[in-house]
Image 1 (cartoon, rainbow, N blue to C red):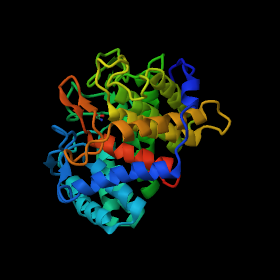
Image 2 (cartoon, rainbow, N blue to C red):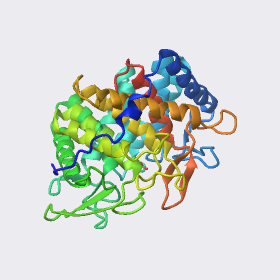
Image 3 (cartoon, protein in one colour):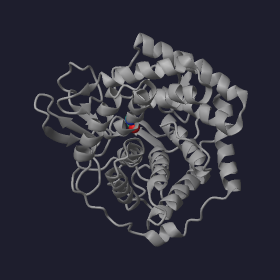
Image 4 (tube, rainbow, N blue to C red):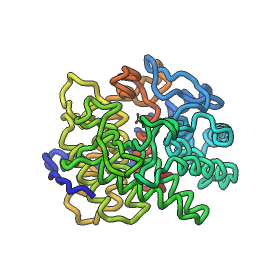
Length: 394
Ligand code: GLY
C-alpha cells in the first residue's frame, strides 16, 4: 500500500457539537423519502428513472443504464422499512428485467455490474430467496470477472476489452462493484471472484490513492507489463484535483473492502480518506462537486455527501469503540444527512426525485444541480444505517 499521510481532523470540536439523531428525527427524514418514492412509484414500476433528472424530473428509461439498480434498491429498502407489498411488487417486476439484461448481455460492457446487481438481484435473493435473482447476480458476477486483467491485477472500468485506450484503466468507483464478486464466491464456493476482487483492491489502494490521502478518479495500468502508468480524471475538475464523489466512493469502498477481506490496513485507509474529505467541507458539511472547491462559487454534490455518509457509517462499524474519531464520524454522517433532509430535498410536487443539488458529470454538463438516482438511494441507505437495524446489501 502507498505510504499515505493520515491528516488529523481539522475541526473536531465542530463535529463534536453535532447531536446524534433521535428515533423521531430519523422517522421524519425517512418519511420524506418514502413520500417521494410513493410519488414516483406508478411511473417507475415497469420503467426506471434515468441517471439524473432534467429540471428535477427523471426521464423514464428501460433497464439500459449503469444506474438502474439504485431505484430497485430503494424499493427493497422501502420494503424492509415498512413491509408494504407495493414496494416488493414493483421490485420483483424490475427483478425480471435484471435477469433478462444479464442473459441477453444488454449494455453490460462496463464494470458497473455491482452497482446494477447488488442492490437489485443480490438484495432480492437475500430478502426473498428468489432463485432467479440469484441467477441474475451470478451471471453479472461472471461478466464482471471477465473484465479482470491478471497481468495488471485490475478490473477494466469501461469499454470493450479489446479497446487499447481503455485496457488497464481502473476507477475509484469500482470499489462498490467488488462486493458482487465476494458475494459470488460466498454463493458458489469458487474463489476466483474473491481473488480478482482482492487483487483489484490492492491495486486500487496502491495507485488510486495519492500520498496525501486524496484520490485519482481513474488510473491507467500497462496490461503488457503490469506497470502503473498515470492517474487521470474523467468527472473531476482536473487530473490532480480530488473529485468529491470519487473520494466518497473511496471512503465507502475501502471500508467495505475491509468488511469482506479482513485486511485491517483498509480501515486506516478509509479513515485517512474520510479525514481528507471532512477537512475540505464547507460549513454546511455538504461537499462541493470537487474538493478543490469549498465556497459558494461551485455547485454542491449532494449525492457525494450521501455516499460519504454511508461510508462513514460503514467505517464506524469497523473502528474500535475507543477510537478517537469513531463517534465524530457518526456525528458527521448524521450532520450531512440532516442537512440533506432539511435543505436539499426535491419538492414533493415539482419533481419525481428525492435529493436535489447533485452533480452527475460537470465536464460534460450533464445533471448539474439535479437529482441523481444514486444520491437518492444512498440518502435512504444512510437513514437505514442510522437506524442501526440494517444488514448492508454491499
Ligand atoms: N460511478 C459513476 C459516477 O459516480 O458518476
